[in-house]
Image 1 (tube, helix red, strand yellow):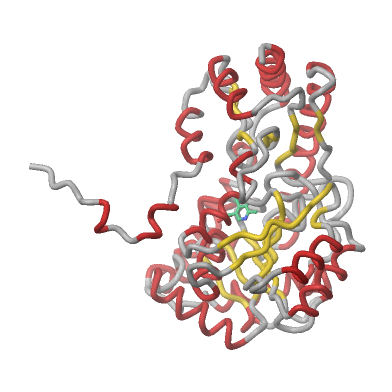
Image 2 (cartoon, rainbow, N blue to C red; image 1 turned 45 degrees about the vertical axis):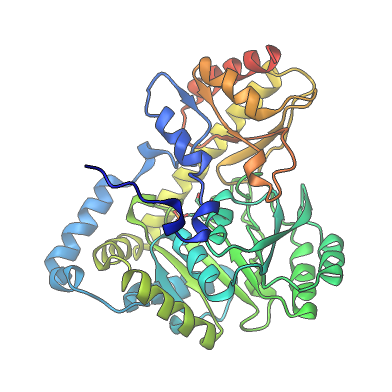
Length: 401
Ligand SMILES: Cc1ncc(COP(=O)(O)O)c(C=O)c1O
């Protein structure tokens, strides 16, 4: 006989844990007839399968036992060195190997940061809209959200300063995605970055900078990260191999220059999983250590995604009625459209799915769920012809609204 668990047995925080709209949608997209602009999937046909396979062979021949053994919580030293060296070479940062903690995806970094900062009722400041997966990770710690006005150039510094001045208590931290944001595709303008860092320093609010897309730029590289402008310890930086190489490896990194904070994060990680897969860390490192090979791969990814972005914006211009608006992101995997004409995109989603096309309705990306006209459109995962067909179907759904 099944035993039914009474809801009162579960922790109160589970009441806020709703299955993510995106994870739910991935189930629909298993159907090959469906054209999906919904998931945040990198283009699978670009994964460097042969090179990863060769890297795996090298690891097994040379480091096989270490790769299969338990390892240290903060990550294998060669990968931590690689992360520090890459950030220092790209941005002239002074990251030390000890500052780096390897995590199981940046998603784990979000969870660990929430774990060490948040008690129930604490305040988190974030862009509006923000990455749904971050809201989901922080929700487990029952915070309140302070959404900060954001526009096409990212978070608005004056609005940030005004929100902090009025906040009581101050937020525990500011979370943002400065490059080609998920969901909007917007980038925090270069001149705003030092302003944001200064405002946070003035109010003593630490910054969590989440940068999965910074290397996926199209016409020109992204501006320097916030951590480049900050006093040591003011910014924690998250990077990941998921969009650069492949998300299935679950290899990502936190740069935590503040030593006390890093110790807390490492202890929290130890309690969560002891360490990230040693095997995946060695394989990722064996693949990525050849800088020329990685650059060639990134060039392919950037060029393909830029073509797909262009295919999507061209199809939108051709198919959509005038009340639909969208941006043209300078990198990443998503663009943001607003439906206009009073259309609620959660209702639009129901019609679109009947015509075998899906996207992510905007409402869950707003921490207060107070805007329903947005849609996140992923352009990285589909070939150009499917993008054109999918946008034509979506335009039919909009016109039928
Ligand atoms: C802004 C943002 N942060 C974090 C993540 C999680 O990435 P990872 O695969 O490294 O866990 C994603 C994935 O889509 C993302 O868009």
